[in-house]
Length: 170
Image 1 (cartoon, one colour):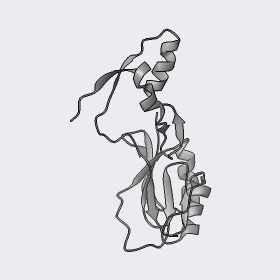
Image 2: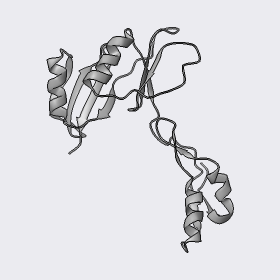
Image 3: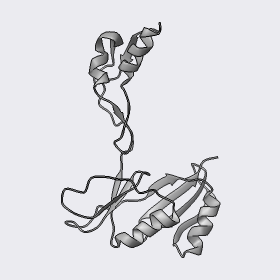
């Protein structure tokens, strides 16, 4: 494991500044920390900092779900759960592709069976009202509203039976 290195941000800023940070959707969110520190140095703040060069996972990126009926799944995620469709490039193999700002995307077809997923989880606002909406629309519940480890939680099935955890933090 590589140890973090201490650097002078004023001289090493160009290496980090050339690489913008990205959010879960791949969108650039700003300049690297060394560039920010170099900018702060111009305002009289310290410029030395530690850059962690240890290989590691930085965060959740996305889940691509292979679904049987793209239209039914779109209605579930957009109309019932309130997901927002985001623009994206088409898949290289030509399969239909429906990405959401919430970090998942849907596709259909493709070679072989999809990998199994235990469940996917999303934080929500007003989980009780969301549970009522889902129940009123005939959505199957794995587990009704309860106090889960992250807060008030429900587990429901999407149109393909994928378990979806929805929770509201206290």
